[in-house]
Length: 633
Image (cartoon, rainbow, N blue to C red):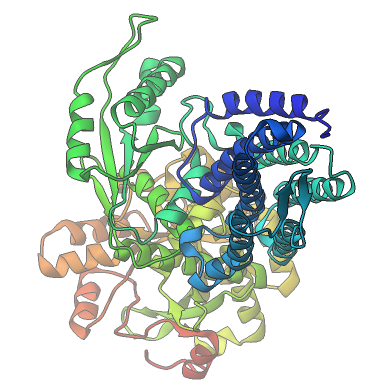
């Protein structure tokens, strides 16, 4: 007789869990499909086990062929369960679509052999046989244990081999799941008449669900749409499938809308939009990435028609049945091209998020993410890596570009310029890496490194021999915001024993927005002995009248305003130069590339010149070699 003591709690757990599981949304990815297969098998295994066992208790009341079929069915489900648990473990590391055919085929070998042996029992005894006295085990009965222990062993090996691909919670949960299965196998071997293994398998299912399938892990609370982590998982499986659409929907001016309608109203509107998308497009997976960003992923729709439908819906107000609220919102779209030549889901997600950020800056313009977009993003990552490497290793290089006297064309000063190299050793243009450094906050470190290298250069070289009276060092607007800027620069000056009069600090017009802060910083640093130069005049916010309030000694004309003068000889630049001279400033013209340009700037009344006509920026050692003696530039 079979012992059914564990059947009732097992069935209760199973029924409750099934009701709960099928009430939750699930992504169509390998991990979730593997879990669903495990769950369905777990329904059939205990049911077939109970039915087959009950009939054997009353053996002679039923025909022999029925016992034969039911027990064979049970054993087939039994070995199938082991395979599905193993496949779920594998899905944690790589989706089935990305596994090699060889590995997938090998994972089925033992199962296929076991399956055939069990199936053969319908023709000739393999696992069991039936006679007048009832049910008896046969010679190859242990095949079901060999199959089970094989897949359990393979699961443990996979877990330890790919341990780094899982976080601590995932790894411990996977070990716990497979340990419960192992315990169930052992107890079934020790107590074959107790229907106990199904109970341990059900516990393993619950542990797996809590660790990997729990809706709290992959649903966004406000909308009950899938979150960003879920999108990353789905993109990983959709790569290379040309029939898949990925459409991003951005609410225009999201932050402004929150101020206009209030955050509470917009949150309700977000929920209404999510509900509408779910009802209208039930075959598509819906994601919400916060800040008014939705994503639809799936098949069976045309992207163009989908955009038209969504756009049409947003021409109408969003209304709540619970209040008189009416929200008038507009959207823009990010569409992913379907010809990606890439196999990295993280890059796709990064491209999508970057496109969303760009949409916030470009009005009335949708975006399509293509392979070219991904190349640009990859290049940006290389730049970020180079900036981070320069910060961490203090490897920013200082180049120097001459500043020459307008009359003699002799060297009178130099501008210290930061240069970085990529992984191949090639120089990165400053207009590429400086915006990146400003955005991630590394510009402070880069600027300080250049200031220190300029001080080191002044200490180690005879500036007087080269005819240099000062070196200009750039300060970014972000650097200028630092309250400890004076103390940090003072410490560097003391370290190299450098007179601050040898250094002129260049600031751009962007730093002039906050007059009170600018005055405070400049006065503090002027007390130390620094002089200030306004860089790139004509590219930003300042005007001649405002300059009266600032203690600059030199105004550098941006190269664009200089070049524009030579394209169209108007009176704006001459008037500006004369105004600066009248106010007591000296004037430097940047971007000088020809003899004629130099002569024209002299006629306008400039004091200093800088540009490729005299020299490109040079590494510090080359600069010393070239200008070791004061010669005509």
